[in-house]
Length: 250
Image 1 (cartoon, rainbow, N blue to C red):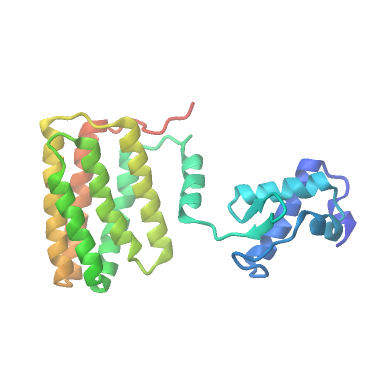
Image 2 (image 1 turned 180 degrees about the vertical axis):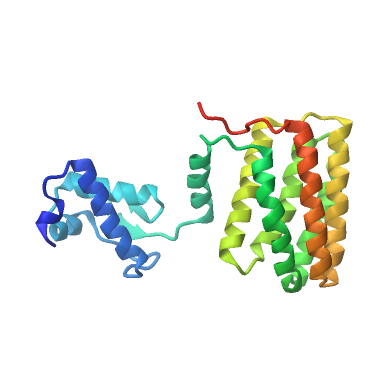
């Protein structure tokens, strides 16, 4: 490794550049999940950097979810598979300081979720149909005016569908948006009113009709229902949260 690559740079910049070099090697497939990665000593020797720089670079990669660092006699550095939860967490941190509104979220949901319904309808297995049916029964069992619990159960229905999507990009973004909505619902809460009970019944009816279309493998009907479902869900959510900036910049 050419030492000039890291000359005349500050320690932080040097470690960041080093992390990029190692990251590229990990993403290229040189190291597979679970394999030992470059250890601190190896990095110092190969890249001609100090212990502090090597350690800082590894910390950067660990924060990105690319490696796992364990201490002790059996410790070391190993490559990890970036989890959906980790990726969601990083994206959530990014959007936390954005002026996101309910309209912003549903503008995306109204496009993506009907597409999801169209794609997954012919692919849903009997086990998945049963999971959706159990979720529907759970929503029916939620007590009157338990609005926060209702929203979480409803969103789980959409999570199950996203899990079945063969398009990993579409699946990831839908799961992220649903997780974002869950955080908002938990943080903001929804006032327990007669209107919230109407929202519950609207969601229940749409999910029941969607389940029928899934059983019939009717992708056209499932797409239509999901489109209407998203429009009505947006209208109800706007009543509760008034399209306020639900993630505000400080």
